[in-house]
Image 1 (cartoon, helix red, strand yellow):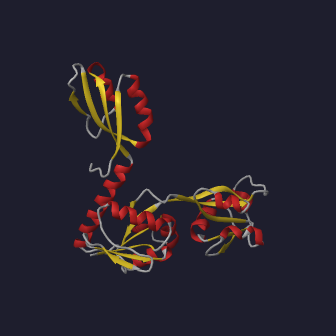
Image 2 (tube, helix red, strand yellow):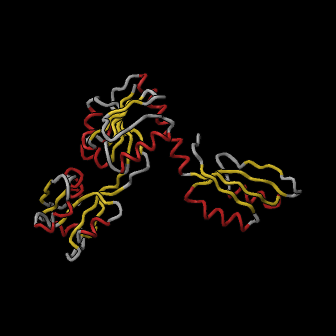
Image 3 (cartoon, rainbow, N blue to C red):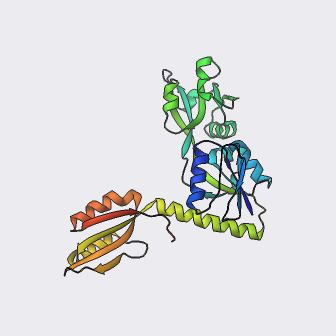
Length: 283
């Protein structure tokens, strides 16, 4: 059995549980249980503080973990990462009061900066030749300038609304982060095989989220142009229609290319374009 540690509450926890369920793994979770066992896969899920997860995995208390890269790197265990998961994306940024002048990172020379990520920030400042005084605090970093603790902060930013609400503006991106799957370095052969199975399922789910299944009708005279626009995984599926001179084409397109490709398909004569979500996609 594998023991997987995830954050016990918050958006990262919700996204992690959703991914596990989309991998076809069934389990029961509740707000008061700190661990649960899957019913159809040899997996036990532990609900922990996110800051504790890298250490638990490094020490072998948990075999796997899902955690933000920012937490992993700050803890000093970047080598545990085995798979980027593509969700819970954010950035670690420097911010200053909106009224303060700021031309470059050099403006922070000798200044006080409040942060929960002194290691990542310290390396960033050193790389830019800036020496600042770092004040490590565990929460409510945004309040530091208004109470006189620091002239700037470095904290996790998603939409930026929290900074705005506290009279701050983002001036430098220090680190970009997303959720990652991590694994302890001494898994047994059997555990490694289970990890490979889990990663295979996760990759299939992620690949499906980035893709759409498209069906359309096109005149045979436009088929070569349609095939050029829709390469599919290998090539599109083409089926003759009852109406002479027309074919049905089925393929897969990437989410970020969909609208551009659709307009091109219509321009070459495609009709009746249907777009469907993909639940799983095995390459």
